[in-house]
Length: 425
Image (cartoon, rainbow, N blue to C red; front, side, top):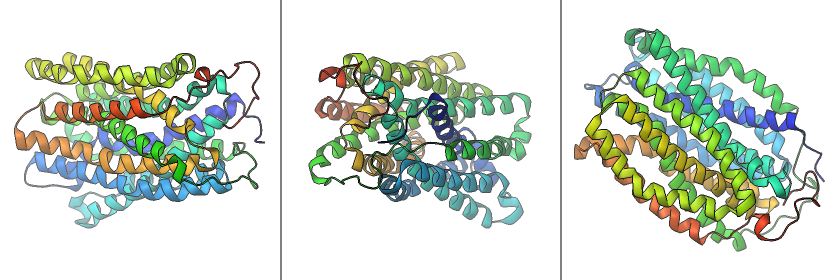
């Protein structure tokens, strides 16, 4: 039986996850400036596109981390996998922060950036499965949804921190200063805080039940859940990285100021933080499927009209309203969906399977989303291209959610009072 997990340890796990996601996603808030520093191509459009392609390259390492560290966590414990992924993330973020520009060292600069992004990808791919499994196993059946959605809520906190750093730097620095050294400050902040997160995670108790004697179940009976989970996560990640793309979209397509674009990142982060927790809390009471399905159905209906409205007005206020609405719908659904996938997998396969399908979905669809949407805008000449792509992906996600088995204990009659304090499912 795993040791009891205190709120202090839950905080440590969530804080560590938030720090890793901040370090990985801070790149997207400064894609324009990073493009200028490392990819000085003939036009600003292609410079940003190259920067977004390298952002996507970071996702190539995530399946490696998801499989290797996920399986490691299922065999030897969640804690050592979390600590190892944290060390790798620290190396990646520090390398990005101190790599000289293309003007200083030529082609070595973009090569070093690509290597750093791949290392970060391995780290984050190895973080998601163990962190989600840890939070689920630290809960009771009555609050499993709320605890598990702390995974997505911490991602929202990371986006909020990244957006705030981007907003403050864009507000107080000139465009030239922001492009020259300002964006590096955000990365150095992440590198400076990492030792704090490292020591927090080293103190975590283990939650993997019967660590030395856990019987590993065969994967075959759970392939259907894994396949549905992959589609759901692919749909969700396209939504998330479309929202991460909005600051770049606002500057390159709409021509808005960098500070206004950064504010949209803050709105997304705040919505993710609040709505993920609300999703988990409500799904503990009425079930996972109603919470995750209906928000996505509404999202299918409103995404294109919202982008039409934005294209017509082309101002910061409309951008923030669009970001708010899509963020609420996307993150409210995603929280319950993550819980459903994790609950439908046995403990002996949970970290490795969840980490693998999550990393694969993110690598293929999250890593390509921003560059693909930027390319679609350029090819079609339409500012609505991201909206149509997001709508199609959301519709496929709804179908997969409808086919996913309901897993909430409230739907199976599990008592909320007579449960162990720290009980793996």
